[in-house]
Image (cartoon, rainbow, N blue to C red; front, side):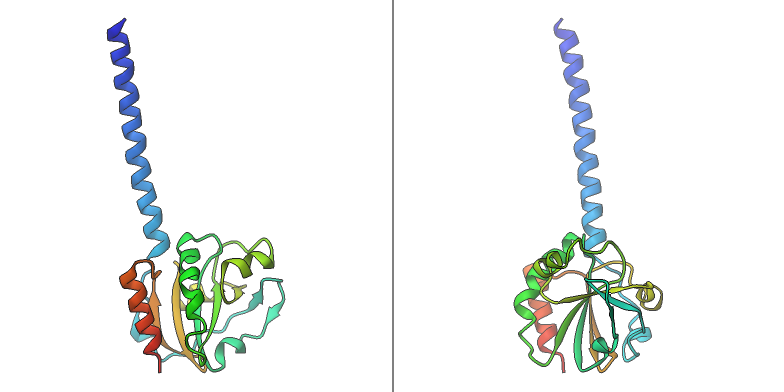
Length: 181
């Protein structure tokens, strides 16, 4: 009888170890894929016009894309179901008013829409637009989020790739924001 229990305990231990190892592997992989985005080639995008796109707001109403091309703007590429984007939005909330000369907007290049406009207002501290035709995916190579792009009158001047989650990254992003011309 004790041999049988010992064998059963060994099998359970083995299955538990495999489950834990698999969980850690896939959890880490998921976190990296959401929080890190490949940098667009700087020579290709910096000092180039921001691509044209068909935009709509959280209500599904078409939006004139000139809103992103007028003045000094930080466009934050996000998706609604991205945990790194949610953490990023909490970090960005007090910073959206730090520079009165810079407007912040969220842009969803892919992924689901918010279930209600109130959900978007609770989750993100800036107005959100959707890229209806997937233009940014093709023209900018945006395939992961979050990514932040600084525009001056529709011209891309600077970019920030990934979420500012760690204290070091948050401090670095604040310096980046303060360094905008």
